[in-house]
Length: 133
Image 1: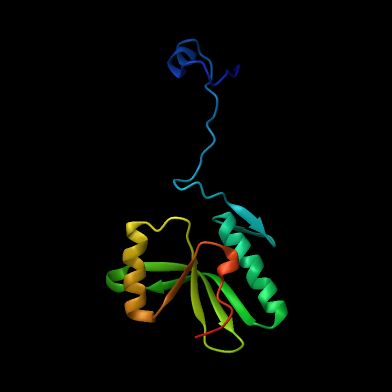
Image 2: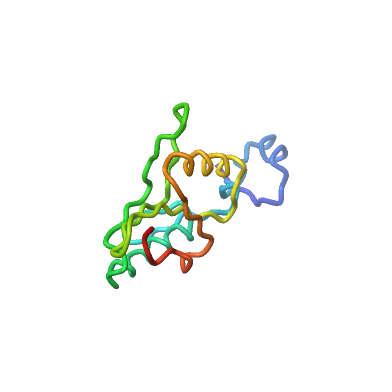
């Protein structure tokens, strides 16, 4: 079946048996899935943070980190943190990367902090904490 230009109305195309062009899908907040070190992260910021954490491991500041760690909140609600980071000079920290803090995230953050303590939210990979709690 022939394909058509995006400027032609879809109803006209359907009437004449022409398949409309496929629309590229974007996330609600323009997060672009990005691959780093063989892993696809939900956003460029998340992938950049993973790269920054790897550098901190090589520098000896961080002993290790894990991505996409689930935490059980109240009433069966699960919060998935972007990263849990273990530091050489202190305890672990939970880190989330956010471009936009939605009302749902703000609620989950409050529930998380009530149960587990502080949640570090960063908007740039360079803002990753460099010491434990």
